[in-house]
Image 1 (cartoon, rainbow, N blue to C red):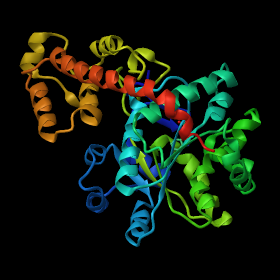
Image 2 (image 1 turned 30 degrees about the horizontal axis):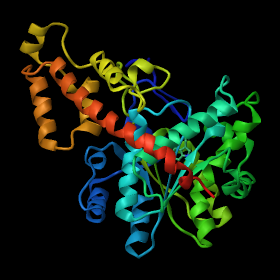
Image 3 (image 1 turned 90 degrees about the vertical axis):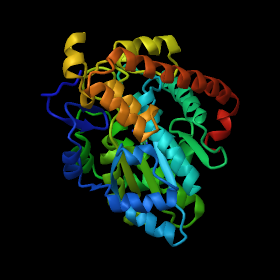
Image 4 (image 1 turned 90 degrees about the horizontal axis):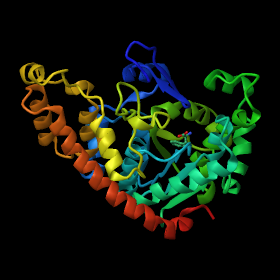
Length: 374
Ligand code: TRP
């Protein structure tokens, strides 16, 4: 488990330590999402989605340029993805929910890449078959979120490589081993599949242009750990004659344990979309909060929502109203309402969400094939 004193590590394959998001902006050389940019988004989006209002998305590259283009009548495509290392947990849904909102308000085509090859290559025990099973099961979660079937294409790298391969080899020709070594930390002992893989993850950024036969801007919503891929992609874009893809970066949704993001390798700290609602409830019951060790202390001194996982879940997913959010915070800080009560409230919402999501997920089995690249 990540702990507060541990040094921050943020790579596409590892996120640990206490995350300093301002430092990431400086380290990665991205831009903060300024109030000015948020105002521009508000105009186009008919208000601000809670993930923007609450700065879950906090950083970007070229989002201002995407909006310039859009305002000049040029639509953009969206590109996001998922590494199918296991079942989907609620933390994964957060940027996808936002992506769907972007699709709706900007009427944008979406390419959703599932990197079953990447996960196969980096996880020693994972077989191709297992990776493809996860790919399919994860695709059900994606479809269940309600993406528009007419405007959404899911790409399984292994199954649908023909969608990407011609772009990927063109990308790969311009990316040297020493570049990916420096960017991703690959070594001589890294398998050659993963060394080539960044070209595969770059490819969907140009797919909109390839399919349209003309340059189309692309916006990538993703957690900031994916940024190294986009640096490489942006570097070679003009060599292939395409626009650099723009990004909007999200924070990580913390797990239910102390510190760190929600991680599938710590199953007790994440709520999987396929968890029976009662199991999810138990996990919430055991979650780390900002509460005190005894009831009387908590009544006297109050709790600390700034470190509380229950608070985060309300904040980023389950409480839309800013006033109610403030109420929750005050109840906690004043010691008026104890953690048990707030856990109960959250558990009710999570259970309701899971029941609904699971129904849609089962229905998705009938239509998921229509979403895959053809
Ligand atoms: N590499 C990502 C992961 O492991 C999956 C991915 C592929 C992705 N393309 C993407 C994520 C585009 C965000 C945006 O999760």
